[in-house]
Image 1: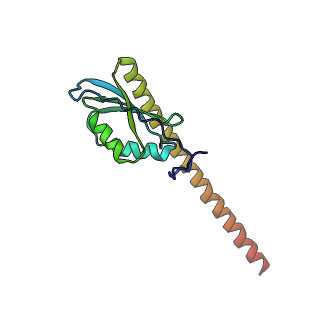
Image 2: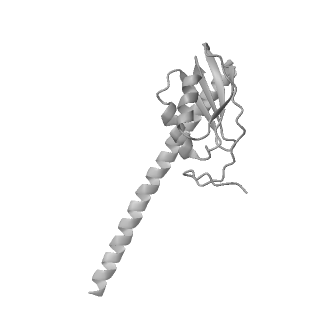
Image 3: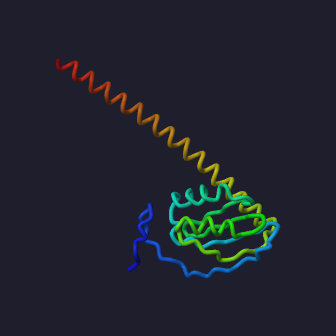
Length: 153
């Protein structure tokens, strides 16, 4: 039986094994660092990570795999600023590996980031349409209710 970690999504999460691999501190160039994030199980944690890493210099792209609780970070230079930011979030992030980025990896990560941004825009449009229809429905319901009250007077 797994323990509920009490995250905002309420899913049961089992912690992954902590298999940190250290990257060279004199790293320069483009790198892909893969993190296991055992408590990242829904979009709210993804958003929290995006906000935390937003100001970190050198990050080129983020790629999230919520079902496998993995995060790929395409970055320039050292991985330590990314790792320290992730550790402060309390999601159990651990660095799994850092490898030199090849052009295909960079392109895939950037495509994933662009796709997520497009999906976010689509969801916002749908939310706006839903809100508009809610207002129309409430107005029609209130008008109908008010007209019904007048007819009984």
